[in-house]
Length: 126
Image (tube, rainbow, N blue to C red):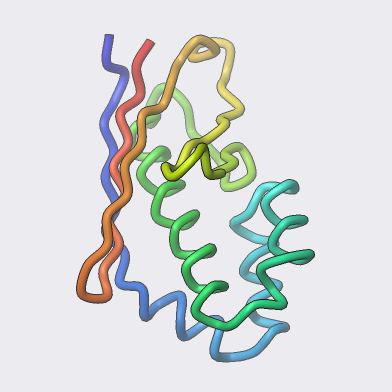
């Protein structure tokens, strides 16, 4: 049974603007939207890379988390840190801290990008 479908379209330049403001702003933004494990990885690995890699990491997570929020709502209101996005092979995957009502739910996700836009698509099923 499909619980919900969520989609988010992000203009990547919004995240680029944050990263270009400097490491202090980037770190604050990362702490706000990333789960603890994502933030640890970002701080130890991604933050030392070029701005383009930082933007890619943050934009991907922002977009997919917005999409899962829309797919789960109103059955569950997710917070940024309830969702951890990671790579499973060449595809993105996510762990979600589901409520008891959705504890058996699975999220199927897809991500696409073109022309400065990033689109995240999520289907939540039980």
